[in-house]
Length: 134
Image 1 (cartoon, one colour):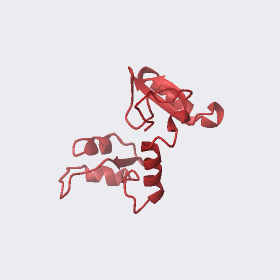
Image 2 (cartoon, rainbow, N blue to C red):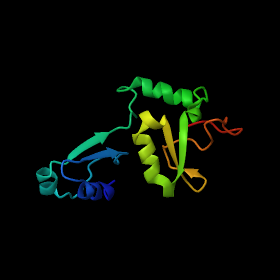
Image 3 (cartoon, rainbow, N blue to C red):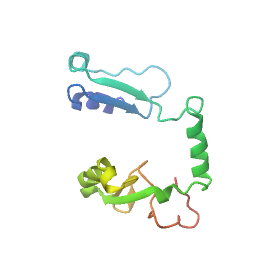
């Protein structure tokens, strides 16, 4: 995070937003930023706990538990799959969800899904034995 946060603020367009997903280690962290550019460009910095705090979003914890127990077949939500070299098309499909019917668009790198994007089997398939849809 200390390396990528400054990069993100440098790449953000005027009036853009930088969302901090992930986290920092406990304690203080010094991160040099171009504050004048951030202020003059009105770049918004938005911290996000990614729904990781149950006391803020209790339902998120309940959903994660259902997924972990295999009681919520989230793999069936994947409506479209694209390889990494088709990422622009994937974003177009996701953006035009009213036209395409996209629910969950998955991006794969070789045989692997991008972390947090979707599970690694088809929407019409059940997970392989011993694996859960997470």
